Length: 565
Image 1: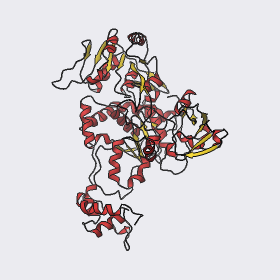
Image 2: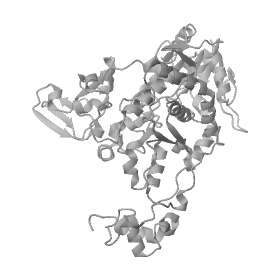
Image 3: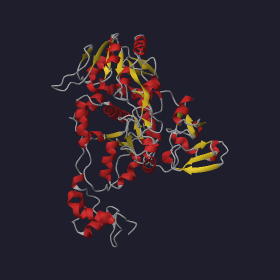
Image 4: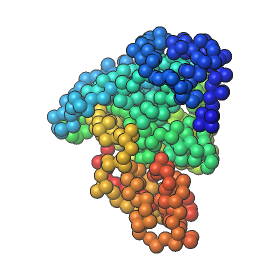
């Protein structure tokens, strides 16, 4: 039957593999062709329906034994210990932030608005999880763990029902009952695990997914058929989600939702930011826990050490000799608590160029440090840098931490040419005279407001046109040739809002005389090409994109104002 093209292939697979999972036998498969066809037509829909059978004959009130095991997180792992410790340590701050929000506004979560949430960090499960855990113990990335910890605390304070699990699902049979979760927060690894565990139900539930995605996924990389045909296919991306379902560490592109995290360095009183006063010593702490990160940076750090006593926290494997300069005082790998004690005394936090875009510089700035980092000239990108290669973004990375450079900047963040000693010396002298600062968006209240906004307004399961933000927020800008909507809106102190693109996808909205109107799959549309006065309209809503530019097009951009921070 041409309507069921993979039926024969599935029959052959199950005849050979039906004993590989107990759930097949539960649904009546015994290896015979008849039982296999019954299963593939009734329980799944790979084969044509069989006459004289109906779905109600299956024992729906039972569950396969393999599916009844409870998923219990491994709380003894280093990663889970870190998450639990951070939540417990910051619990009082979260509670106070929640109370302040409740007092200052009507932003309370009603019983009707409470949602059931699953948090499933796929990076902590299976073989990927084992590798990640080993890296954590050697001073590997903690940024993702910081975000998972803060998200779980944030959702709890907002009054939602939460399950946190790092245990992967088992069983190949499809999900037979509606899932009880309204939202499922996971990552790229978890998305792949869930697709395997959920079978055909995955498509049905994908509107409930929210993907923690450190570096962001632009629309051109997200829409699978377009990514394949236009050279945007990478290891990541191609999930055909709404781009706003990807939730980032920093606001890389408005096409994704900025989730963020909380800096531990400040408290908030009322509506104003109150920096914590730390007594500062004349010391610098270098941001680089593994010795390979220091290669080629000794001269840069040496200039800094002429003005400040310079400390490091480089991991030293047993039996391994570190080759750090003699002017460095190395503490080895510190616990998070001891590392923060060191930051509270330090005046300067020194970026070496890697790791990219982590939370540590924001934490350090919040504890009264100034962050100095290398400028990348030319900028790094997925086309020129091994780390970003394959990442689903076209961003041009101008420094180790572009958010800190662009959104915070001097006097709290200095981006320097590390080969220019006088440039470094001038920066260090200015830094010794500066005060501390934390962006509002990295406070508990800032994150609570953001997550409350997303849960209240983002509904990707609805088929209707988005109504938030309202059309009244729209400020239309026609970009110059070769500029993205991100940069055009930002230059006017606005931000691009992808949910408003549908209001602009008409020839009338362009406000120009179009010789021809071209509807097309193109992540740069709607836009105008002065050559031939062609107006391009978007055929696929998943490709509406704030990111992206081309010298041939003037992009039509939906900008809006926003609350600072």
